[in-house]
Length: 216
Image (cartoon, rainbow, N blue to C red; front, side, top):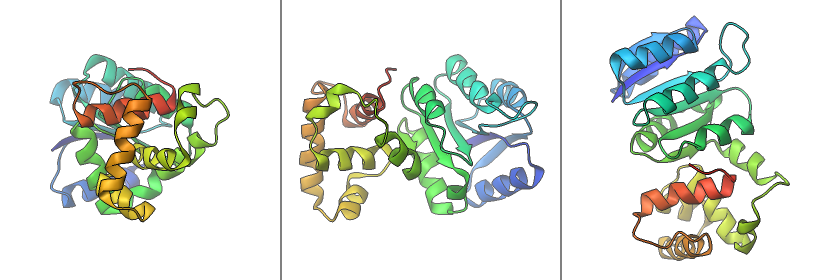
């Protein structure tokens, strides 16, 4: 896996490079701002770009704008956004481009297995949201009306999907059998109008987008 990353803090940047090396990833570029990452992606064509939300010079949304620029120019390049904060508007805007995106809090990066799993899933075209982001989004009052048909348990299952969990992992988290989880997912697809020729991975992404109220 080829990775380009942007982090303004030298210590954090070097730490990310070391973690990615441990995962066996090939870090093709490690830069200090969003504009440099966009350029690096154009030059090196990585599988995934990793970037912080708040970057120089204003430390507001430069990282997000760079991530959106990368997705618009190179849809095949996966993007993993890191943040110290739960900024749901950023997550929904990025996810509006479809699968191949993730949003994790920086604390999650210290867990090597979680980082590896997130990168593999988004490079494969899936979506990965930090559990705290999922909880915050579920608490919003502007929930899409079409989700009202989902049962509380189906919403729990959909939250697990949004976090990027496999069916087995959702089953373990909810203390249910994998078969029951698969039945819930089939019901979710049907209620959201996602019954069709599309493969399950694509429908999982579309279900998350429907839950977020965005459209690719």
